[in-house]
Amino acid sequence: MTMDQNNHPEDALARYAHDLSFDDLSADTIEHISHIIFDCIGISIGAYLKQHKSGLINEDMILENHSSDDGCKLWSGRGMVPADQAALANGTWAEILDFQDVVVDPRNNGHLAVTIVPAAVAMAERQAKSGADLITAIAAGLEVSIAVLRAVGRRHRSEGKGFRTTSIAAPIGAAVACARLLDLDLPKLQNAMGIAGACSPNGLMPSLSSANGAFGMDKDWVNGFAAQLAVNAADLAKHGLTATPRVITGEMGIVASHSHGDAEPLSVPSGGAPNIDHIALKKYASCYGVHSAMEASIDLVKEHDISPNDIKKVVVRVKADSAVTLSGRNITNHMAARFSLAYAVSSAIIRTDQTSPEDFEEPAIFDKQVLALMEKIEIIADPDLTQFHVDTGGFPAQIEILTENSLSEKRIDYPVGSSQRPMTDEELNQKFIALTEGHFLEDRLGKILETAKNIPKLNKINELTDLL
Image (cartoon, rainbow, N blue to C red; front, side, top):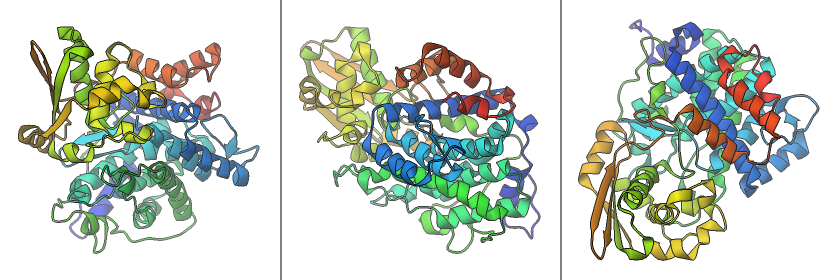
């Protein structure tokens, strides 16, 4: 896209988001975004069924103050509330299991759809928008957020800094998606971007620090808060609230505040939505940084018929920052398990043939056999894997399993769910079924699976949300 020399970079990005049409999207992009929507809803329901307290505390408070007979669906099935409150509740549930989407890009990583989808679905439901409208809005939002992340770089969470991509970029993309669903004109869409960018939650990550050891619930709620902000930002822009047009690249803006010397110019897609394939989906209910290590461990055990009882040592080689941030071994709750390389690898080896989301829940996280094997696991920061991450954005891992009589090694650069190895429709269906087990009657579940497969053809997205 060309840009007038007198315009700011944000103008071109906003114009791109405003003008993007469903016809601009490739069939692969449309299918992937449909998968992302379906996946996010299933994860949220799965977290609710586990009765995690962060989601319950939040949703109970919302129902106490905002429940009505009209509004948008809570994906838990507990009622209806205004769109911004639905985004808050559903977005909080979507974050809890760490089963959400991941941006895999050389410039930055993190989670975007987990914020954008709850906000956009709530707005689309309120406005009775079509499936095609929703997919187009989410495509625009994801592309805007990826552009922000690339401009900022990854130093916002290095050397002790802890600003989350969820708060830096996702609220802007979610606000764009909501603005599209409100049919806002270009100036108002840009105001929605500015409001969301300037008012985004702080998004610090101290609860994810293995050194701090807290693993608190704030990490879940801040994602819901970001989704709620996006709905509010678009509604406020519609009613005339203004904001700076330079929220990303301007003085005191996002890049200036978070790039720490690693900034690049804000880039705008030249057409379509070319970066959606950078969004990976997860096979395991844990931090993406442990997935390659888990998969490599499972493959080695199966390929070489290794008994856990025969293992003398396991060496886990990963990129440098993962070796630090995922080094925790004190498994106090489900979140500590999801962000522990040692736990994830040990669990994968012990439960090779029956890995499931339950592996990261109580009581499985306190399994004595898994905890004992953790003591034999060494984690090493590998320079080659670190460079691979810098070059590609990928999360590689190399596993070495030593027994009395053998040494087995395997490296995986891209786990299942990445664009290099995408999950199949059947795998995504099975993930949804496993997450929602017992929640829907069989005929209702079948209707949901069929409707989710046809999101682009829905006259109203309510045809899907009504089934929830």
